[in-house]
Structure formats: C-alpha cells, structure tokens
Amino acid sequence: MANFTCRHFQELLIVDDDRKLCRLIRDYLEPLGYEVSAAYTGSEGLEAALRDAFSAIILDVMLPGMNGFDVLRRLRERSQVPVLMLTGRGEEADRIVGLEMGADDYLPKTFSTRELLARLRAVMRRSAMARVETEDRLPAMVVGDLHVDPEARTAALGDQPLQLTVIEFDLLMSLAKAAGRVRTREQLLNEVVGPEF
Image 1 (cartoon, rainbow, N blue to C red):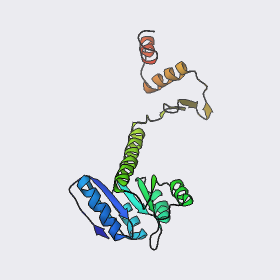
Image 2 (image 1 turned 135 degrees about the vertical axis):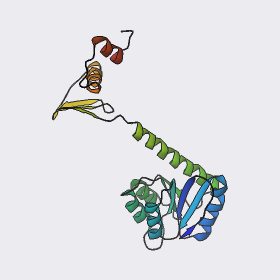
Image 3 (image 1 turned 180 degrees about the horizontal axis):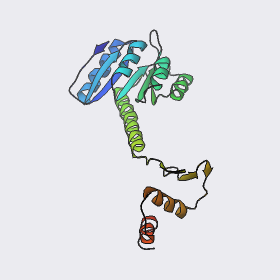
Image 4 (image 1 turned 90 degrees about the horizontal axis):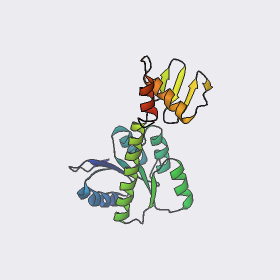
C-alpha cells in the first residue's frame, strides 16, 4: 500500500488497482486540501479503512481478490464512513446493489475530476450533517416505570403506551425532566405554553 501525504485535514482513501488513476486523483485533490492514501487490493483497502480514520473512501467495484461490494459489506459492519463507489461498468444493477449495500454515491470511471470533487464534497457534507443530527438527538428519559422519548414524542408506563395530547405530553416531559423536584403551576405553564398563556 502506498501513502501519499499532504499538510491538510480531509483524509481520503482510494481503493483501486489502477495506480495511474490513483495518482491522477491524488494530484488533483491534494492541492485542494485533501490528504490522499491509496490501496490497490480490496483486502488492503479494507484493512486501511478499519485501521485509520478517513473522511471518505473512493472504492472501485472491480478489484483483485476481494471485490468492492465485499469490501463495502464488511466495512459497513463496523463503520459509516462515506463511500463513493467507482465502476468501469456503468450498469444500473451494479449501482443499485452498491447503493443498497450502503454506498453513499456512485460514479462511472468516465467521470471528470470536477464531478468527482463535487460528489465527494456532497457525500462528506451529508455524513457530517447526519453526525450532527445524531449528536443533537435528545436522550430518552426514564423515571421509575415511566419512559419518555422526546424525539419520537412517545411515552409509556411500564409496557403500556400512553395516549397523550400535545399539551399532556409536554407537561409530562417537563415533569420528567424535573423528577424529584417540585414544579409550580406557573413554571409548568411558562415551560409548556409560554408566559403569554
């Protein structure tokens, strides 16, 4: 496996047995702020992808030994790194299989470098947004037998789901957040419906 280094922050892995294509992509992307590593077989690529933290992976379908679909399947068991798949055969069936297995996008090998960059940025942007949404997700609250999920806006007492109006759910959530503390009527009204109520 060859490593190409640069002084920037976005780290990419190219997994392709076409060394000339790997050099072309590296030479195009490095001046734009990417640090590019290359692996030339599926097993080398999988090993590198699981060992190091990459911002995205460019993965060829047709690889010696382990093909790109097998690499993707094994990678998805342990990582959600964005994957842009390349294929020399632009067949729809290949694209569908790759996307259903967890590829973030597909690009035929007749791509222009500008299209590669645009698609790479798009899959990395979507991945970053998904991470932020996951991190911002409100955790479920458990108070005794009461379970409240603020994201799904559901509540259950033991195994019994509770049927609540919007206001009832908001009141219950406010009380669950303050478990063990007394809340006045004014505090509850201010939090649930606002001071103008």
